[in-house]
Length: 444
Image: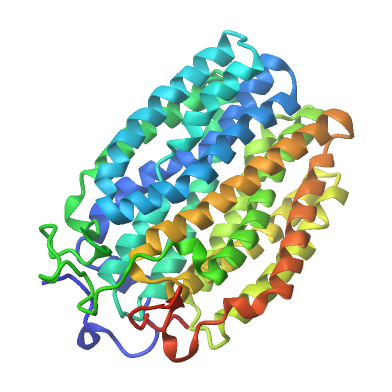
């Protein structure tokens, strides 16, 4: 019997976080999943701080971090597709081992003052093998809460969890690199990846089962509904997630969000160093991420009556407006306050984007779709740290704040121009390449 939430078990009104966390088996993947997510938030800032320390250049540091981010963005969707077809454990275990080994090699090369091309060579496998824990957790929720009104609550909870990691991760990495040793951030990142990733992979009972057409529900022992299908509906062909037009538009939006993360990481580090207070970097970035987390908690608790597409457009407009003011903030209090507002605009946008994916993409491609969005954030972050690093080296301290403004404005223009492609097809049926799929759960 699949451990889904039945209609009779659900209370009247909007289900909340308490009910979500009482879902059977949830804690077995949430706890190791949280530990395994920390490295994702620590990786970029750890590379920036280490390489800047060894080379003295934010441009070189940003470029090394960018190679890692681009590699992750390019390989993450294929990792998600393999997880959909072969199971999460089969992808996670070798990926974790490769990531740890290549991350340690990158650390040794940086400390040995190796040439930049050698750092790039080590950064490629480091980024390509980043475990896609967030998308895998979301895929587990989607299976266990099939056709349940708890799905949007789970999307909000996951966004809050992501943002909590972006509060803890950069603070931890910055503290380790500045107070202990410049390489301490990357070494800790590797240790958490190994421990959390392997523990998460060991939770076989909650991972989506795998049949000829993608993942379905697990019966607690890795089985499906008896016909190689996890959802009890007609068998469907696997449809690549990126062939769904809405996923491509959302990827552009998430690229803009990545530009905020990357641009702020480099610009905050340069700004705080320029005023002689490098330790404030983690606190300022943590304030930005805290706003993100708090707004995510509130967003998940609201019973929204507005359509997801409208919420996405309104939220992204607010994000672009607030991000456009960062470059003018030249004091710590003003920068902290504006950073808090920027963070508060990000979580609702992320939550709505992931909620739309539930409606736009068939079940057999969800992990892949989630990894495209996660990869888009990483790619936007990679491009942002590169451009912001160059601006910090060649312009004034804080010039990197221009990057979040440019990234979000360009993404907003794209969203407004192509917003019709974010609409769910009539009658709740997702169609791609002429293939029909089951009716998804209501998400709003």
